[in-house]
Amino acid sequence: KLTYDLAKEIFNCELKAPEELRNYKKGKDFMWTSNNTASGMVNIMVYSYPYEGPETFNKKYILHKRDSVLCVNMPGSEPDMYMQTDTAFTDVKPIVVHHKYAMEARGLWFMRNDGMGGPFVSHSRVDTENNRVIVVEGFVFAPEKMKRGLMRRMEGSLYMLLLPEEMESEIETALEEEKEDPKATKEK
Image 1: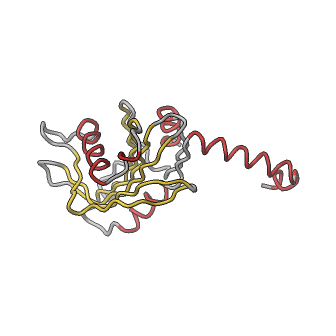
Image 2: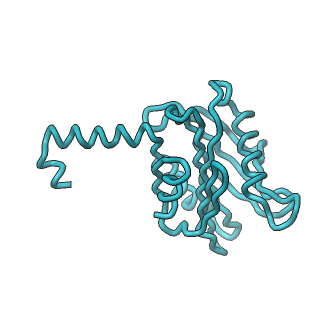
């Protein structure tokens, strides 16, 4: 619920995520939620920036934007500590989400000048109504355990993001279904 409310408030988007993400941070065009546990810490982050055309959808641009957002919004406990992308171990490729073009970045993050790090996966999508790129990302810090299951849960949440124009189409689809078969909607 917290992640959903923050996404709605800051980005006018809908995002379903695990209920255990109860800690949060808000910034300018930025939000982060976490379970903030000592073991198996899982996180969802959402941020946006202006869409400047197709050239904003390449590995160099996406990772540069990611690092600039992380430098400002995800600092460490000391000066010169902040979250950063391990570009040597990060792949970026086009995918389709909700029948629309998107870019997926999958790789490793680390805390600059600190020992923390782990896997992440993100989706960069164009919000055409507001001419911006919305990035939703899941990342994990769990040095003591296998991360595959934790990452799969976070990755599932990425597909749950609905941009403003997609929320409207979800409502329209529900209304059309109700017109076609009013009993079917009541049974749901």
